[in-house]
Image 1 (cartoon, helix red, strand yellow):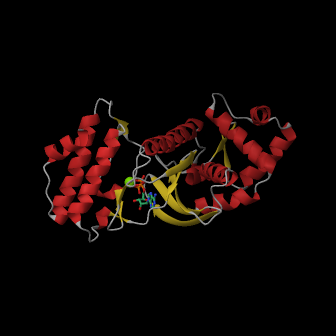
Image 2 (cartoon, rainbow, N blue to C red):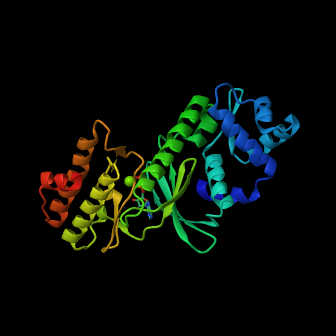
Image 3 (tube, rainbow, N blue to C red):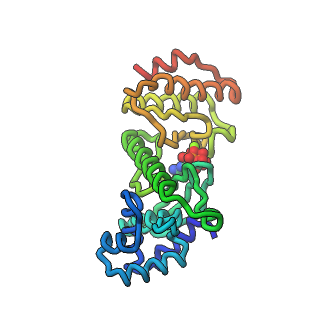
Length: 286
Ligand SMILES: Nc1ncnc2c1ncn2[C@@H]1O[C@H](COP(=O)(O)OP(=O)(O)OP(=O)(O)O)[C@@H](O)[C@H]1O
Ligand SMILES: [Mg+2]
């Protein structure tokens, strides 16, 4: 079973004390010093015997790992904790099929209690192999800590940027973020990189207008290309914003220029539609 599916199942079976211990391990993991059973007990307010029992259960479910004398959470636990939050906040009722699995993230279709369809993006930057680590060597606490920090930060950044872009139809709508995940509207489209049959001039205009809107909100994507644009032939959506920078960033203009030239190059090569880079840039900026 896919680890994310496993995480979604665990949300239904873990006991209160296991959640309590897991949350305490997560907090202790992120603070300096070893995450021993004693510290987990004091952090959770649970008696040590109950913590020891919970640790045994969590370990048998592969939610935590031993690292020297410390306990650390693994990817499965992070995903279970995140999914549980969405369920608690009444956003989610069920996990659907995977939409895309990439190097940096996995995106799933998920369903709300009123039948709403969302996309849930799980960041997996700098994948540390939590599984092979279990067999080969002990996982380093600092490695887990860095992984958590990087991925929780990416989700927060993507949420914050998309929030600034709210109100324009060419961006996914964001609802919430938690840990390494962002919950957004589900977009029914294909990547522009698959070269769908479209009215290229109109689609390019929509993309330029969306970039102009983003710039007016002070946001530059910095990783824009045909791979981060979805379309259904009529609408376009610009996705993937964790690395975006603000207008005041020292490289803002260079990044914007690169974003725009990636798009213009693609439209010229694939659809034989040409635009002048400097003209488009000055349209976006003014
Ligand atoms: N809101 C959404 N609705 C529908 N599909 C989406 C949505 N967001 C992302 N996807 C799908 O997931 C893929 C990856 O998303 P995104 O580009 O945001 O992540 P990424 O970190 O670049 O992932 P990768 O490692 O695959 O490049 C997209 O190409 C698209 O197919
Ligand atoms: Mg992408």
